[in-house]
Image 1 (cartoon, rainbow over the protein chains, first blue to last red):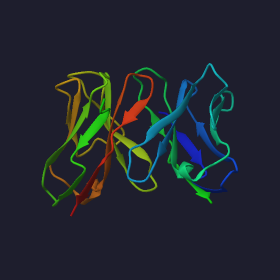
Image 2 (image 1 turned 120 degrees about the vertical axis):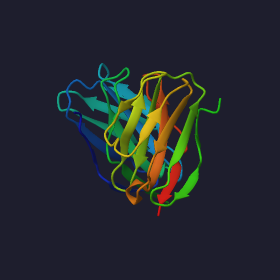
Image 3 (image 1 turned 45 degrees about the vertical axis):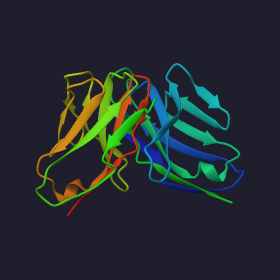
Length: 112
Length: 110
């Protein structure tokens, strides 16, 4: 089955700087890669996703890149703000009704 | 729209007791999922459903049962709770375009 590895497990970034979280996956048939943000005491929330026919996707300060050849994808957050502090999860699936496989999460702390 | 709701929010059980966690979604999604989240282990899939009347095992199904009698509801049952089932449980639903999560149920088994 699919295996998703996520790094780093913790990340501290000065406010205003950029943060990058990286994930690798094992199943070359995976074609859907969402990212989730989980704030303390809440459920994960989908923040951005990318499909295998696209190399990069951007939404305001958040961007995701995908390298299908190397089987890795990354989340980039620019101009970080205190409200970006949370746990971020990457995931992968073959799309449709195929279930997601999640990474183990990255705890991002923005230092004011 | 309420999205995905879960009841109860918190529960404490004694070993051997049973309980049912209820998940409801109002987005008309076909797919529903139950996960557990433990420190350092991310989200692990317990059971899932691809439509009303169907269920399937996920990564960690032992000790749990599920039912999807109505499209909008997905129930997770613990027949005989064990301390190893102490966790935060999340329900999610999807239309195949990404999963929407509920707020979670924090379960402690003593």
